[in-house]
Image (cartoon, rainbow, N blue to C red; front, side, top):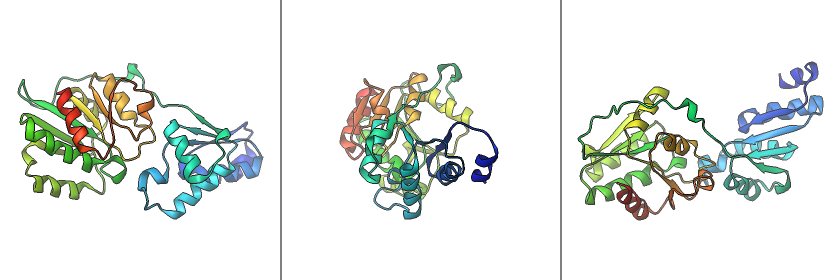
Amino acid sequence: IAGVIARRTPHDLIHVHDWMTAMAGVEAKKASGKPLIYHVHALETDRSGFHTNKEIFEIEKMGLEFADKIIAVSHFTKSSIIKHYNINPDKISVVHNAVSRTKVNKHNEVLHKTPDEKIVLFLGRITFQKGPDYFLEAAAKVLEKEKNVRFVIAGYGDMINRLIERTAQLRIGRNVHFTGFLNREEVEEVFSSSDVYVMSSVSEPFGISCLEAVLFDVPVIISKQSGVAEVLNHSLKVDFWDTDALADAICGLL
């Protein structure tokens, strides 16, 4: 379909986003010969680590090789493209993501808490890439020192049952809340109620939720394995696997 459209419709360039549209972009370029821009927001190597889906990986590689120009959302992502896909660095440009302050809608606190109670937030897909298991292990260590803290895990994914079971094993269920998927207004409400935001990602091409947290005046702790660490120069940063350092940073901010 993209090839048919490219032959019939006048255009100057073709701009695709991630593997889902890569094949359409390649077909359009074959049909019209116009320049192809491949915008990389995330890679299969980020999402799946060592257990990549080979079909998706090959689609990504084909699109990256066929593209005239590649836009990566971070230098972290650019390095991954070069390392895992063997792409010439000269055709990769880095353009960081951003958020708009004008779109921030702050709410009154909706999570009921006592004046001295604190909320630590994880917000994202509950998957390997996002590192929610490291967040939970750090939570248990914080609760050994600070009892009046609640940890909110907002989002849904294939690790949710494992995390709930681990919460029970750690005996911290009174202090850990799983919200499931949140719509935009609910996300704004939970940001407005939080005292600390944690992004414990194993491999994060960018991490735009950290910028959103900052717009809500919530201090953030960022995985060093992320693109957003390149633009939030003065936030606390830890290696995703170092749950001792993460717990220490949470306690420090609280």
